[in-house]
Amino acid sequence: MSDDSGKAGHSLWGGRFSAKPADLMRRINASIDVDRRLAGEDLAGSRAHAAMLAAAGVIGEADERAIQGGLDRIEAEIAAGTFDFREDLEDIHMNVESRLTELIGPTAGRLHTARSRNDQVAVDFRLWVRGACDRSAAQIRDLQRALLRRAEESADALMPGFTHLQPAQPVTFGHHLMAYVEMFARDAARFDDARKRMNECPLGAAALAGTSFPIDREATATALGFDRPTANSLDSVSARDFALEALAAGAICAMHLSRLAEEIVIWMTPGFGFIALSDAFTTGSSIMPQKRNPDAAELIRAKVGRILGSLVNLTVVMKGLPLAYGKDMQEDKPPTFEAFDALELSLAAMTGMIDDLTPNREAMAAAAGAGFSTATDLADWLVRRLGLPFREAHHLTGRAVARAEALGCDLAALPLEDLRALEPRISPDIYDVLSPAASVASRTSYGGTAPTQVRAQILRWKEILS
Image (cartoon, rainbow, N blue to C red; front, side, top):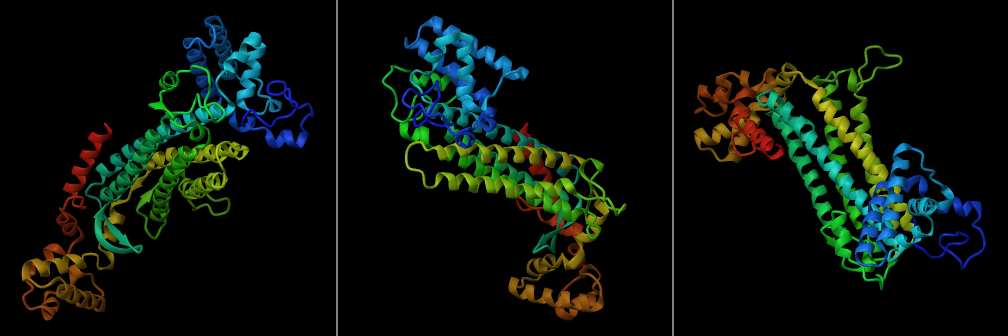
């Protein structure tokens, strides 16, 4: 895709140049293999433009009817797979216009009145990215619903919470999954927010300076579902930050998917054994018959590199371009298409895995008390019951952990006399807080891991997503 200047030897755009482009130039110049994906958006933009031109009296009603009929024919041919996408016609715009000319004759040329391929591709691409944002946000909400279903089943299932991938404090599996519900909520909000900013229509900016024809840009914006027309013709054809913002949202979402995928990989290892996945999302080994590999999670984990690479790719393409249009901008679509293809596949696969996985409650509960994970509960008890400053309680708890390590037991099994050797006022009810279940149940602060809090957050999100 490119503007309508600087071409050679093409009957649709030139009379000034007569030399035919070399084959190599034709190959580097053509974008139809990529931008044929914009066919639906290109037809929508052309329909809106033709209707507006007729309403404004720029073209006649008979011409508009012929154009609309021809566009309908082209849409049917594309849907049937019979449309001939030709590389020699460079891009989707010229392919459509050439076929429209074959169908209705010279009247097809009236469609390009008061527009350029510059504003044409700008509106096509903006429509496509807007749709990609909508699809991604909808997929994220499906993933959130899957996480909610699993979290509700596991609101009281004990598991270790980690920092530095070391056991820290007991939590519940439901609470852990709800953390991702929150993360993905922000991802969906980023797509929604980006959509609001990009929802301005560049059609009518023409090549870069607007047009002298009496067009109605509000009409075309409304017809295409935009909130308003763009306010500066130079910005209209040269801006691609809407795609960059969508890619940035996609990269952050992919990073969150990768973190969850990494946890699935870890949880499936024999050393953890926290979850199992069925054959639907795992593979075996060609040489080791015992293996069940979490390939889907590993592939999702890898997709973040491609999606982040797409963001960097387009940023580098755009970073040095003066206003308004440069042919460099033809390279905006490959990374954007690739990124959203990868993101949509990853979101679908992750949703499938969350629905598919089976938690191993026994293995998680057994690990929940590892690494003296209730040490903070001991320190908190010393503060609450004995009135010790937290730093002193922290120090005493560290000594209790050292004693338990020396005896080869966990804190809940440390004899009372050993605890009283550290602080004589410790009473037997200290053991009420030293089990993982008691620790979890006590974390009742808003957003905490107590099952009552987890269920309250699940209910809140069910209402939001209903």
